[in-house]
Length: 187
Ligand SMILES: Cc1cc2nc3c(=O)[nH]c(=O)nc-3n(C[C@H](O)[C@H](O)[C@H](O)COP(=O)(O)O)c2cc1C
Image (cartoon, rainbow, N blue to C red):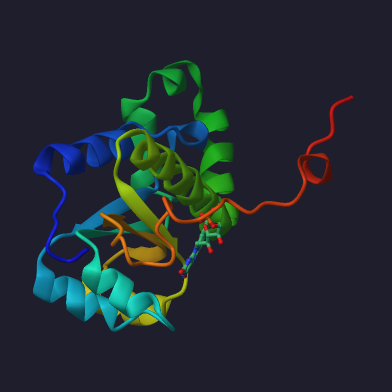
């Protein structure tokens, strides 16, 4: 619903939650870009596919979850210096972790971003904030529009208030999922 905006308190809940998200080895190889400026949001919408552009334009804010392009070197050293668990590790262990950051880089960083992405979806649900997760966009184009440097976009969430007439409004939809036994096995 374009005319209804989330309050700064609602946005702060989301940004504080992102800041506190857990990640493997506390690597925090990510950044959340919060787009609230309507003109900039419309520009960002042009990077989206199918029916997504209108959803971005109508949203209150667009959250863009980004991964760091390199975790190796400066970034990992900063984590070593600021995270308590690393204080007891010697240089050899830190060397192995640096190697892991170098080899696992892109996939490892993306996995952590998706954890934060899911976490924020849950926070939205808990705080009466409408959310539409979206991967349907041109990554390269969005990165260019955002002028990302040292980061790449991974996934997005449009947040705000669903329009009553919107066929995807959660209050109108019956959640459809595969049978529980199909996806859960208790032994
Ligand atoms: C990672 C991810 C990417 C998604 N990308 C899109 C998208 O680009 N466009 C869209 O309309 N919905 C997108 N969705 C929404 C899903 O289609 C939707 O969550 C799913 O159909 C289940 O519906 P429900 O969330 O209403 O229960 C995405 C969901 C996730 C989790």
